[in-house]
Image (cartoon, each protein chain N blue to C red):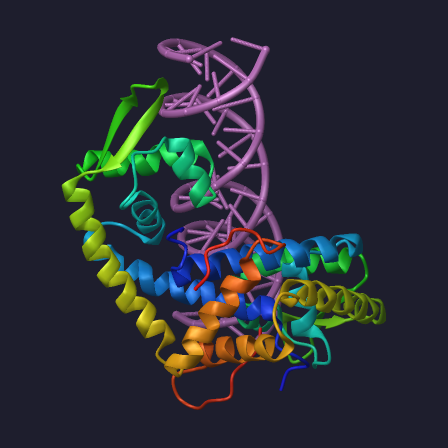
Length: 146
Length: 146
DNA sequence: TATTGTTATACTCTATAACTATA
DNA sequence: TATAGTTATAGAGTATAACAATA
């Protein structure tokens, strides 16, 4: 009935729906899905510069400032000058930040599950894999996460 | 390498990639993917009000004004007062607008094909179907299949 | 009083330019 | 001279509020 078969329409609205679900799930923790992306980039990794983190997220370094500001203000991330290059800030998750990430991850996974609920589990896995394949670098390189 | 691939990341970047591809493909025609959505809503349909079209696109009625302005300026869409309710504009594709749609659809389909190129055709079909299922209304309502 | 289209305004998000401190 | 972080500014995009015409 509708002309909504366009993949562009489907992908756009899937994005809107999923973002709404995950934002709502993360809101009680005081973060949104964009903030969660920052936590994911930082967790389990050696301290990195703001610019490195920004590159992994695909955002501008100026955008990164406010994101880190918010996490630093709540004690989830530390900024300190990189001893090897004092122009850089070494940013790192604190214990509190790690705890926040764990709670956020649980909330995120639950929201993702609700989004995928109409699908057979095997089909959900195929969906994820198909998106990975489409976004994979042209040649068989190792993909960097964001 | 990562703890897990966040579906939010995959869907967001799939959207970005696909939008970039389709925008580039449509640019020679003087429209972008958002404009193409307007053409898709209008094609092969009885004239409708701006508000109806806006609802189908999921945008505000105020946003619709500029979209229709642009198409009207190039003679692709006509605005005329609805005889039955003169508050409404009956908007309709012109012959020129239909020709524009046909060219745009060809360009769009080609771009979509490039986006899906890394996937086996059967997998691409499954991807489209999975997205349709996820976005389908909550209960088994009168939804268009296929 | 409610609705459609319109305009003006505000808000969100993000990028660009400019400044500082380091290198 | 070049780079990382910061700040201020600007731009795109879209929503909200107010208004005129019509119901």
